[in-house]
Image 1 (cartoon, rainbow, N blue to C red):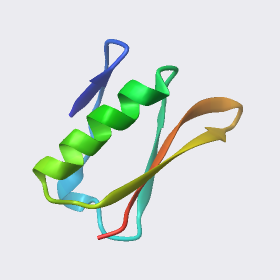
Image 2: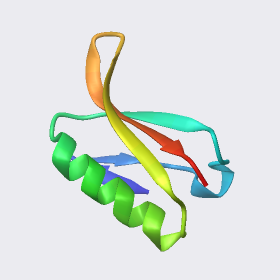
Image 3: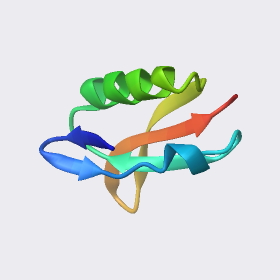
Image 4: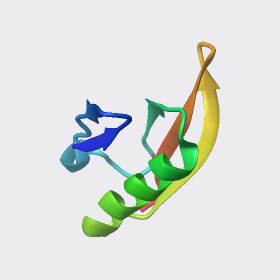
Length: 66
């Protein structure tokens, strides 16, 4: 679970397979990327992040690459 802007996001890291992705809506992109990369590193996952807009909502798309 990660927390951004006081909101808890329940990421099912054990089900996060390589080549899959998820989107987290957020305003503070820099902080979101930092937290996501820390959580991924704890699990030894390699991820790629990109700022994206989904249905007019800005956030971060995260892909597991390995």
